[in-house]
Amino acid sequence: MSIDFKAEIERLKQALDVTVVAHYYQRDEVFEMADITGDSLELARRCKADNNPWVVFCGVGFMGQSVKVIAPEKRVLMPKIACCAMARMIDGSYFDDSVDYMVKHGIDKENILPITYINSDATVKAKVGEMGGYVCTSSNAFKIIEKGLETGKKILFVPDRCLGQNFAIQMGLKSCVIGEGECDPKEADVICFNGFCSVHQLFTVDDIEFYRNKYPGIKIAVHPECDPKVVQAADFSGSTSQLIKYVNELDPEQKVAIGTEYNLVNRMRQKNTYVLSSTKPECPTMNETTLEDLYNTLKSIEDGKPMNEIHVDAHTVKYANLALERMLAIK
Ligand code: 13P
Ligand code: SF4
Image 1 (cartoon, rainbow, N blue to C red):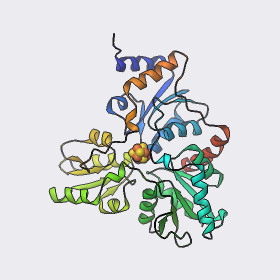
Image 2: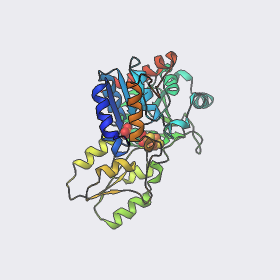
Image 3: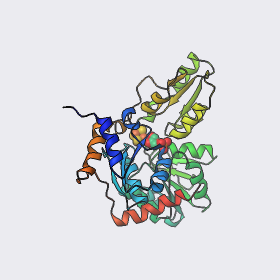
Image 4: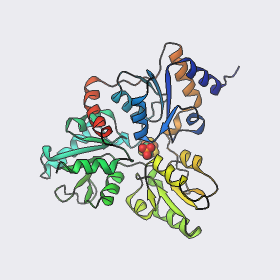
């Protein structure tokens, strides 16, 4: 007999002290089962405030890990421990190499203020925390960089070169990317690691021109993980929640093309909403989690054999927590 996964998930949620969390990029059928949804910052804040001892997180690895770091007493399970491709681009040794690069170019280590995008492993966040730095998300990067600049130090921004450059442009700061052309840390305010999101690189200025030619007056809204040329050509850029708010506040007759992950755009899609790409912009790792995986994870709690539990060692929790809490303290 086949299992009715939706009905079983509802039953398990009633029976267990568990909160199901999902990022906007999850498949619709998984997303619909969640108690908490949001962008990365909202998910971190709301999970920390939640009272249930169990969290089942439908998203990518760094998201579940971040919950474990800010609320170590919680038991955090992930139906799939899928790793965000951008987060995988940097580890502790690449982080150290970036610090060394700046030191070799005449910036003392104590004059470097690292900021890591939340899309990074907890070990990278811990190194950032140890150096007095911050985590940021796409919704608060402006405020966090502003806060970092108050120290008078050079900002080392990892791992997303696009996010780092986009906010530097918005703030009128000079930026450069390590390994891309001349990058002299003495000449720049924000020195970026050379990471990126392959999904958001799919959106191009040509796509923007295509839509503007086809539908004069159309608005273009993109995520700040897109290339700086795309963000500069767009009408709006923001985190997933900020994109939803922007689109919801438009006149229903206003056409808008959106540059972010397909599942979210498709969910927002009404008659005047378009995907800003000819290629389906799916995040492979976000799409790994299925309804069956969610059911199996909840069932594993009921059976007393929790699966895919997130563990982070005490040293990493201590220092990664510093970087995350510094971020959460900024309203
Ligand atoms: P948000 O914080 O905007 O939800 O972004 C998460 C992400 O991974 C975007 O690719
Ligand atoms: Fe990571 Fe890009 Fe997927 Fe976001 S869309 S989770 S940055 S790979």
